[in-house]
Length: 160
Image (tube, rainbow, N blue to C red; front, side):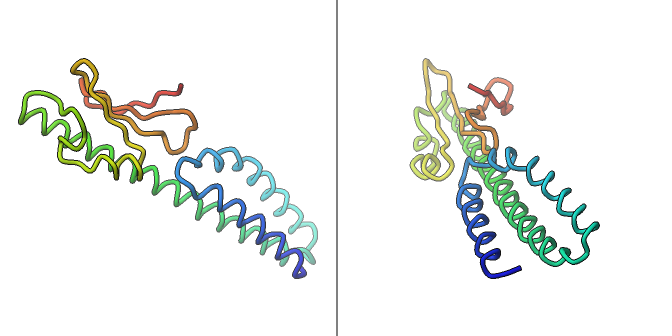
């Protein structure tokens, strides 16, 4: 495998990581996964049929496997961290309701940094006609929102 081939792989990996490591872009991995698996099967078959190509195909497979594992791990982190931050917000809101008897008008009133939660995790809270609404975008599914149901005290995912 020559330098040009390595540069091509590096460029494609850089582009893939640029888009797939961002919050909310986990769906790109889901879309790319079938193509990656088909390509992996093809390369494994070719490696078996042509021993002379094993090293170059093996390197490509290793690089792409590491790329997908890294991007998948980061997206799993974003997903878990988003839920943890939203869960913490819901607990603080419920604690405020237990203390005050009503839901807080804002996250700040519940003792949270609403600006940080909105900027970092895109967590939104609103109080409409006495009913609270807490939500954040689903990390993997595009156009879906995870909403907290304060009556059942459960999270649900709604696609709009």
